[in-house]
Amino acid sequence: MDDFAVACADKETAEKVIQAIDEKMTIQIKNLDLLTRFNGIDILQAKQYIKLYNKTYIEKISSRHHWLVEEHTPMHEFPIPMNAENDYKRELRFPKKNLNITKKVLDSDIDKRLEN
Picture (spheres, one colour):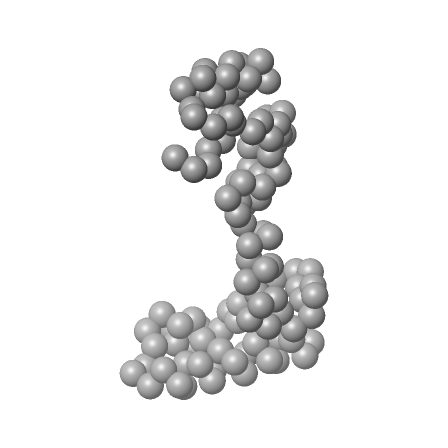
């Protein structure tokens, strides 16, 4: 075993668990207290929950591969609504064999909506 984390309801319980494990180990365990990152995973510890997420890893990989045009790519404040025309909906549901036509329809519709 290389790395491990202990999650408990209170600090005293965590310290007792770590101490019990430490007694069986040949090397001393380092108590890192509350974690914000562990093995590449971001950790947010709140009173009601613990959130595990990968924002730092995704940003690191994205910047290495130059996937981000800007440091913070602007997002639309509101989602772009879907075209309500029946022909458009039918094309999305039952695409023709030529998928390039479907892509062109979607691209042109998105372009029109972004211009407005």
